[in-house]
Image (cartoon, rainbow, N blue to C red; front, side, top):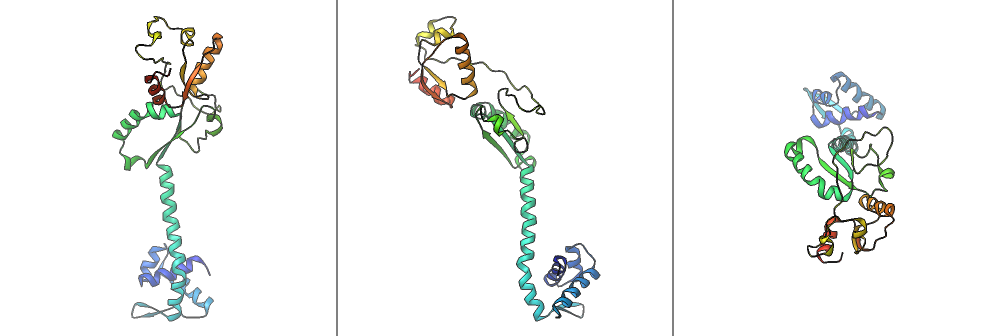
Length: 240
């Protein structure tokens, strides 16, 4: 008993027509008849009679139809579901990046992209995966992600790097803070006051720590967060 034989029998009964069954499983009508005949020989019963150009299903044939229907429907479901999943993967845009980039840099770019390329035609979804600077070398896999948006990190030699933008660190303080009276603010000036910083391990924090360490200057941290909006909020409260 072969799957193609069961399909030939199933679709012949379903459509009550040899021609439609043949078209469904991409074979000829004689092939359909041969497949059904082999099943009848194997089970030693008549499954289908032909009367006045019509297919008449025997009692045994009806029982076989009931048994194989879930199998055939399951196979059809597997095919359609698999194709749907494959198409979904093909139409995904998967981006690995840092929280500050996904929160502040990407929204206007994605908004512009959405206007230029309609959602339903070009892709099914955009997936953003936030990581820390330490995680990048461990987690980056271009079989899983299409792009990495991050400050420069050394990866494999076969990775292509494209310059996106240049940024500078900025010092925020309340208008009445004493540091605003200083014309050219230095790291030494900044270290005199408690600082609200990005949390350790973030790329921006690593650069700042390196700058202070290189200058031999120690500083105090009153609060740290990975969220720039949280940092600004506590600056407004006068915490640092």
